[in-house]
Length: 293
Ligand SMILES: [Zn+2]
Ligand SMILES: [Zn+2]
Image (cartoon, rainbow, N blue to C red; front, side, top):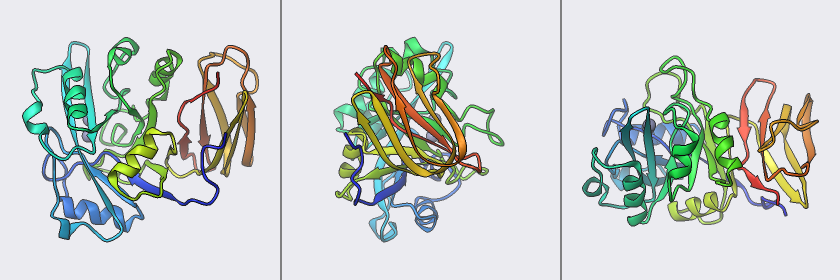
């Protein structure tokens, strides 16, 4: 099965952004223009605990605005931030700081939205906690603002997500910069999606169907799964690594100069595989976790 169409362009977008309507430093209009000028096709504005609706006249031509929010919860040994995408109204009335993360997820779904577990490594989310959440659609395998100079160094959630994937919970993965326009996080990670339907609903639908990948620059042209063989065609990379539920498997790391096509044969007992690319500049890209059984 080929994941991507060979002749359909990808759209580039960020699905986690803050503006002056919460704790970001730029107005919704300024934020949208910054992303459009950086070559983005879609942008979700996800201010804390509210829905920010920009003036339609301020949305730059060619940029698809996706409505969203971010809900936050304090728990005894961790926090939980949940991004809701595609909601059109009403989240302010359904959110309560005293509620649970599951209440927030349920509220987003009640309003017809899609649910993203934000930056689980930054939040110190445990495997048991994540597996207890019902109704999560996707998660941030990379969150740029969860890194220096603004934060300690936990932008990469892949290591905390592999046990979740190993338990059979194959959430889609996003790279988001979580921009507040603080310091250096802007445009340091984004999501690419293939869709003919250039609407918020069309973009979210294809992400949930897995027609997407997360990246800081490297490109997946194609991902093909045939029986237990996974082949990736990519922009030139210096490493291609196949992660799975197995702690060790011979040959899962392929190193070289200008790698553009690599095939992995999943060993017995491998239940999912996800592919991570690194280019010569150290930038990474992440496939979704793919079931192989
Ligand atoms: Zn957050
Ligand atoms: Zn945020």
